[in-house]
Length: 297
Image (cartoon, rainbow, N blue to C red; front, side):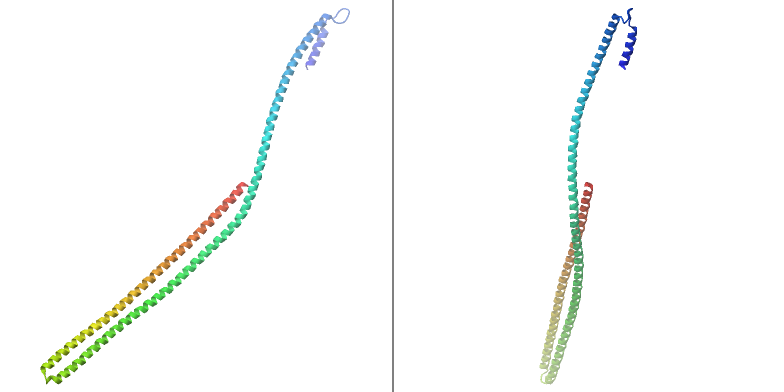
């Protein structure tokens, strides 16, 4: 566009140049015009040079910026490549961990199944042991109770029989002594009657002696009966004490047996609680591991 303006100005100036009478243009006007045109051209050249310098500086600045951007882009690309490589390595590591988790999960599933089966068997064995122990203790208790009742009945019958026999023997001894005394008294009376005529004093003495001997014999018979009764009572007392001791021993045995049963039941219940807690803990651990594996995926 500047060239078009210059051409228009040149054409106007050419038309305005002075002409001479011999034809052509005036030299002075032409020289002035040429000088003016050169000066204008030089200004335009200087302006263009200035513009070129500015453009060169701009190009150099752009080139520098481009190089800086290229360097930074290269660094960024290298950083991104390194980051990408690290992420790929991390992804591969995570894949390996996931595969390891899956393999471990499969192994743990088998192990948990085995442990669960073992705990279930232990629980069933504990229940069976408790039931068997309770049955054995109940049977033992019933047997011992029946034996104690039979033994107590037998002891009572023996004590009653011993007391009855003792009373019968005492009564028999008393009756025999009484009969013997009466017989001796009758004989003495008869003898006294026979000898009364001989000596009344001898008869009285004999009667007194006989009465005394009968009294002594009666007292001795009563003492013997009392001793026999006391001996029978002592035997019955010893027998009762022995029975009482045996009953107390059996009671202590039953108490110890019931205490042992309670301990066995408590131990089985404790084993069952431990098995339940272990089973619950393993189940929670398996659930947590599966959740961790899913989160890692």
